[in-house]
Image (cartoon, rainbow, N blue to C red; front, top):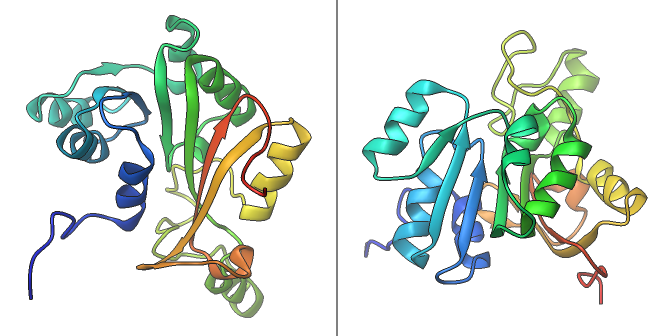
Length: 207
């Protein structure tokens, strides 16, 4: 079998790389060990910067040659001016902040576009575990037990859609994933992960 440049790369990271313009500036909020940022630098030649709290993860980013600052998502964005970056990315991190609405508003101030990736709590295996077992679900996209989860909020794709409409946030693009597949029908039930691209302005994604 022929190997491709994306072998071993998570599907959501492939999709984010496809969304980002070559040579753009990118801020990854909660960048972890820098896996996504490294991929964006390699594939799209972006000017990359990360914001991360975990010191060990920062060391790993620095070892990869990435520029990463130690800081909290909810307070660290105040250091940046308006439209400092072309893209601000929440890759599985928005649900981990205490006040996601404030963090998202700040990200939209700092970036021209904001890419949000989150696990869909209404994915059908999660619903099945709640209904049949009466317990907080554990799935590949929600791999933690209730007592050690970094997630402070558990949202569905439908929840985020309502959140965006209530705040008049312009959704430029929607993409829903399950395993190695893209989901086009019944996404709130069948998708494991939601990816939204937001910007200030008019919602273009349903036109």
